[in-house]
Length: 237
Image (cartoon, rainbow, N blue to C red; front, side):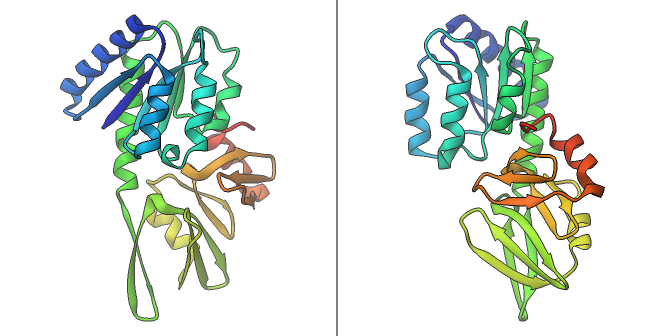
């Protein structure tokens, strides 16, 4: 796991890095931690490759806020799968960070248990996104990485897969069966006809969700409670 700590405060970064080192030894998760006191250095790294799994951002900085960094991350193609954790001196800006599909938000002082929680949750998500979805169409067996699927759409017995790169695929099946198969993943049923990958949900509204590519999908009344319970704390409502 590659973790970026982006903060102008060198002492704060060193403290987080020590915590991550202890967590790595305890959990046996192999972690590489990189400190960026200059946000531009991190920007340069994300321009080159999609290597980051988790980043810690402090909202209150002197030169550039964590909000600005997160906005850059989510605006870049290499920042879509990166998990973001915010730290802040207060809860005043907590609602502001939800639009970045935030993994978590912690109020200082930072405890090692907070960091450990973020690391373990990211590790679980990484295992989920390594999963492959297998489907059959016209006697051909097809395999799709689950983290590349934005959502499934159902029309009678035909299922359409919409991928993050704009590609689509079709096969015959039942959305209920797919939902059961992916019950331990990041997918959530927002409507009778749609099963959506939460990694690509950008906003949750009262009667629809907006995805990262600006696609809007309806949220049925019967499923509204589940959607808000699951994504309400990660999305701006």
